Structure formats: C-alpha cells, structure tokens
Image (cartoon, rainbow, N blue to C red; front, side, top):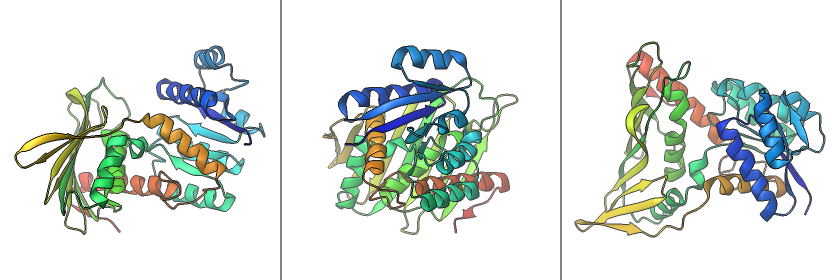
Length: 325
C-alpha cells in the first residue's frame, strides 16, 4: 500500500489532538505518516517536533504546499482563514479536511467544492459526530422504522465558557447540530427561526434558540449556550413509537417505551480516529465525491451547513422565519 503523508495546519488545542491521532494511526495503519505541521507559534512547532518527530515544520501553509510528498492536509486554523488555505491547498494538489465551519461564506464554500471536483481531490469537513457510535446507531434505528414517524428532535449544545471575543455562538457551535440533523434524517430543514442574545458586555451572541422545520412535518429545536454550567452534547428524538436521548460524549443511547427507560447497546468508537481513517480511505479509494455514501462528511455537506448558518443569522437579525431554497 502506497505511502500517505499528512500534514496538520494549525496545531493549537484542537490541532494537537488531530496531530496526535495521525501519529497514533501511523502505528496501526500501514504507511500513514504525520509528515509535517504548520503554525505561527514557535512553541507549538517545537512541541510537535519533540513529540512526533515530524520532518517538516512550517510557519506558513505555503511552505508545506511546496513539499511534493505531502499528500493531504488537515486544517485546524481559525474559521476566517479556512477559505484561503483550502483553496491554496487544493490548487497545490493536496487532499483536504478542514474543521467546521468549512468557511464563513456559503459562496466561498461552493467554490471550494467545485475546485475539489475540478482537481479530483478529496474535500472533507470536520463534522466529527457523523462518526459517533450512538449517533450512527440512532441513524440505523430511524432508517429501520424503529421510532415510527419522526415528530421532533431537540439538540442541546451547552458549556460554561470564558468571554469569547470576536466569536458568536451560531457560527462557532451550531454547525454540529445542523449536521447531525442532516445525518439522521438525510434531509435539510426548509425553514429556520432563531432568537439569540449577548448577555455579557461587549460580547457577540452567547445563547441561541433555533427552530427548524422539515417538509416531512418534523420539527427540530436547537439550544446552544456558552453560559450554562454543564457541558451538554445531547440529542433527543421523539417518534410515534419510541423516544430516545443520546449523550454524544459518553456515546450512550437511552430509549423510552412502555413507561420505562432502557439502554440501547452501543459499541463505543474513537470518533476522531474513525473520522481521520475515513479521510485516508477516501483518498486511497479515489472517493473524491460529494456522495455521502462514498464520503460521509464531504465538502457539499459542509457547504450546506454554512448556508444554514447564514440563514439562521439572517432569521435572528430580521426577527422572522427564513425559507431555505
């Protein structure tokens, strides 16, 4: 099996986790190598050099792109930088995974999808909960009719966070709930309504409540907050036959039927390893496609999420329900 050399761009808090997973993968999967890292901070580069022994250390993405033996890059930089780095990586012939949100502009996101298609390169987005074992189990149950008709879902993403200067919670956090809704239903909402507030002085929106309506008559409510004392990553599903709730962190699925709760067996997964392994397989098997059967977290999925984030902010700003084209 041919060598697969991956570099990570941006090795702060999350980027270090990604780099570590690629390094571990290299010990279990044949010929997968963490070959380089890029960061503006010397301390982050020195950490990766010492811990992983990567041969290529770069302060700019362009330095990495010059290396012909870098096959793919995983971008973990601030969202505002995603479009330019992705574009330059694709133009340099590199396969790309970029963390969410894919871009801050849906037109730019579509440009990246088109560019990846033109170059026949894999473009994936870090929608990691598509690889959560409990979410995958729920999807299987839905597709097998276990819930009956879907009535509503509630997705809660909360934590107590410090002041988040220059960031708003819709752009920063709502990508995951929207993506999970699409993964579970194979559909996108056709209407969105949003109320969001900034509570601490000088901050952008820190709490948001979003209602999504689907043509199937299902509704979904998304609650996100940086002010809640508990870190919660929960999905609730109400169907005509059964109700269930999923703790996405513990990968536990609890169902309610006949007046009692019971656990549905789920075999826990390493979601990050599953996501990165899927990226590598897509490259090796030539799955440069927007078909979710071939590449389950492809660029078109990411672009649709960005479009929903834009419409959600528009709904909040205009105080009305927005129709999704």
